[in-house]
Length: 168
Image 1: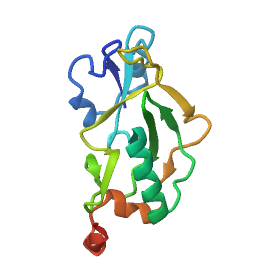
Image 2: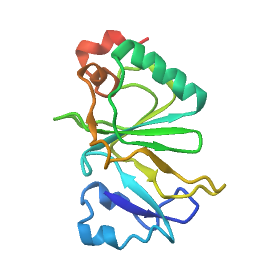
Image 3: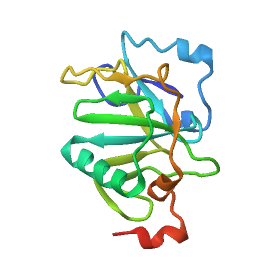
């Protein structure tokens, strides 16, 4: 569900929370003029997507730790940001996933990583940072469909009593 972003900023033009309940239809999407503003994507149930936001060296270190523990993530659309990447996934079936900053659903510390889902939007290509960096697709949704998170990764995004002992 795309939203319009203030040019060279990270904040939406107007209210965006309504997009959490009502996705844009195709006509509304065409109204967003990416040449004069940025584009944001609302994550969560409304769009069916979850994004893993990896930021800086700490984020890449946390990603390596998570992949060694839960397995390598599959190819999926990936946006290059100023200091990292956004990895786009389908929301695992039948799960409502909160947005988490710096920790997993079961308390594992993951510095430099945000799990972006409900109550979250992300800046998307071809938006431009205030400093001039442009977001771009490393692997686009046209090359790869949104991958599903592997079952082992559910422990990262879904709190489950059977995985409580996974916390470090």
